[in-house]
Image (cartoon, rainbow, N blue to C red; front, side, top):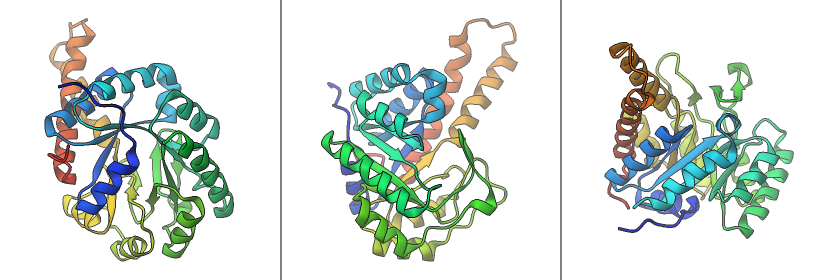
Length: 287
């Protein structure tokens, strides 16, 4: 079967919300993680969002990582959107749009809301001309991911009325909300504010996104999907799977000097984790 063209995220998210499932958005850093994510999606027959961060682009190079991601996505037998996660630097957002990303996130959540809205609207206007989807964030999620670090005291939950205003002002395709998730590893079991999420979903008609979804209990994920969440970002659990398998391979084969033999188990561990999440999100069999 021939591969598909790169997919825009917005139609996939709208369909997911309408049909009561969610898309997994998985962070990739290198060849092995790109291959693992796309292969898992193909085997599960699931649409997927392959995403990368400013930190990953800085590490690997935008053109190099884009080449890996776009090549794998174009050859895939399922819809794959390539997404910039947490684009706080507008220059990086513009570079990703020029490169061909089919979805970008402008994260102005650290800015005063009027400034966040104005800059987000500017990104939307440019992206619309390119038929690229735009995600934004309102509220601040605690924890650390890549170059984003928010202390607990600086985090705050999304206000439903402000969310409704923000979406009207910016015309974004998806909105990431803060209702109790956190980047990185959780200290104790996360407790989501489902009442707040339900109110946001009543007032905001675009698909909702939860960042910091690694480690969320399965029941919380299912409940969030029922309340309008159509995209879950997964990063930490993939890192843990990759490093855990790589450490195991190094320990089991201390004399091995072929990187392929050490990285292959790490790739398979990431693939297994992605398949697990796709089933949980209900997106398996939707492509």
